[in-house]
Length: 231
Ligand code: TMP
Image (cartoon, rainbow, N blue to C red; front, top):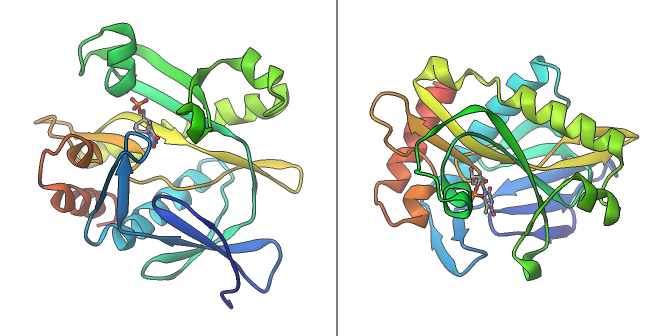
């Protein structure tokens, strides 16, 4: 597959066109940002690890009824994906209190939620990705009611991941979806950049919170997730 023009460069990924108008190459970078890019850094080897983790998780959810943009791995840091028209909503699913939920509602980090909590954020860097609800999605014409239903259903299915069997507590995660030939597909990535993953026994953080909060051992945490997910 030939790599053509760069069409997007984000904080952790680059997208290139290919000779097929329906397919893109998604390149994973080592760069990391946090707090709407106020904090910047590098996680050595992250691009390669995230390529493999994402590929494994996309393949797994595809086998469990969630269509995704993932086609195949092309190289160390590149995967072939379907070209989606992205929906400007970040979809967050939570099983345990952490991060902005702890802050917003004044709850202790680590408290288990009786049932998963699904949240939507408006993808707009200038606004700092504000929390929105279904009515705001409709008001802003970001997606139809049927599309939001497909998205919610996809997020709940992803929440059934095999992490528990690998000794990982899936605290929360962020997904992004897009349109492809009239269907809703899961896009973007599923990696420790956008998930909170804790060791089930020790509750040690194995995700990007180690970078966000300067906890050290960032590369080691990603390598441990790679080992448990892909090993
Ligand atoms: P939050 O607690 O900061 O709202 O984050 C919830 C989940 O979403 C967490 O797993 C990290 C992920 N996330 C992203 O992937 N990108 C973002 O910009 C933010 C704020 C969170």
